[in-house]
Image 1 (cartoon, rainbow, N blue to C red):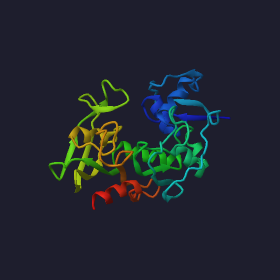
Image 2: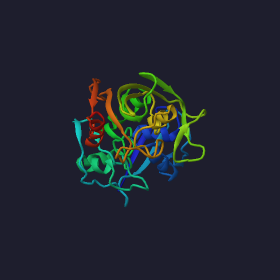
Image 3: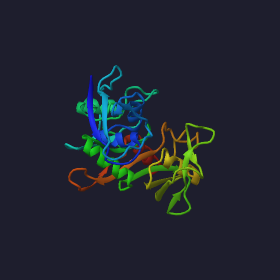
Image 4: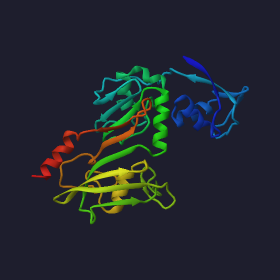
Length: 298
């Protein structure tokens, strides 16, 4: 099936960026649609980096169902809040947020579509997704249920009005009880699948507070002011206190029987896209992380 959409350009910005915001697509999906010639103006095909004048009429042919249409899968979800506009959940560890070549199924998106089938109408690649957590990072996330809510939440993340607080167990004891890591992050110059502190990278800022010292480890609270890929993991490793269990950026060996990084998205605060009420949601530690802390505290 396909659906034809007409959109009037209301912001002078790159076409792929405008289209993503206007009809609730991911930037990647918008670019693919443009490159396929499915976005036209006056029967003229356009390029993703085109900046069109205000008032330009766009004719969009949007495939809604293809052979690789996302499918719902019966994966359990820990729902913290659910209304007509948003879903807030506590993501379990080991769950990738959205499908990719390496993880075509068994993702959070597949689970969401099983519980909320109407989400597929928002986007056929990442329906409702406005932010991500790494596969092995657990914790609180917000998902949009409408295009209006999606755009509202995306703007909040873009304008950095969303507060994100994490808990992490790190090797060693920081010399100060609290501090700020203000180091830009970019793609690693040699290991292209990893991120690294890079002078020419994007600004990244992490505030940390030591909550508890436990033997050779410390429990930290982290308030990230930006949302760069692997930001906390990169910053803490740069500081000299890598996250316990982080096999990419941390110490590969530890005396703890632990198979993932000890990183949990503990609290998320944002403005409700409909009521404008400021909301705070907290996600309790999953059993594997709680057991580690209990054993260290004895």
